[in-house]
Length: 162
Image (cartoon, rainbow, N blue to C red; front, top):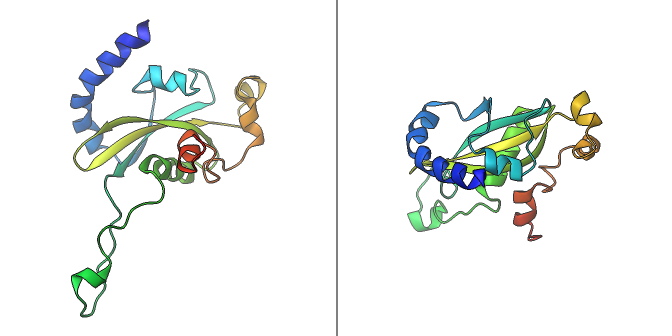
């Protein structure tokens, strides 16, 4: 019941937060999830060993550098180059590279502006004793690089498994 009100409150606050998010770096570790209802639904628990990271990614299609030399713009191959992976999946991979000792559990949408999208990524420390002793999450201790193998929720969706 309380999560329904949290969701409504979050939507109202998101407009003000976008300005603050835009001033931050591209990948920032945060104390608490911006959307606790969504984070908990995706496996986050407020205990040691869980880390939340907010990441920013540029919206839209890929930007390719313009080749030097004379050719028609049509033949230059600059436009209509689509990503094969979703922006959410790319964010998860960037966060994993920034925090190689942690494992990506899941991620969720936070906000967007005209230029950027923000996602929060749930990371788990597989070497933490609290995580190792918890039977609900200790399966992640036996996995390595799951985000690069497309085993997160966004990865499975991109591979056509959902």
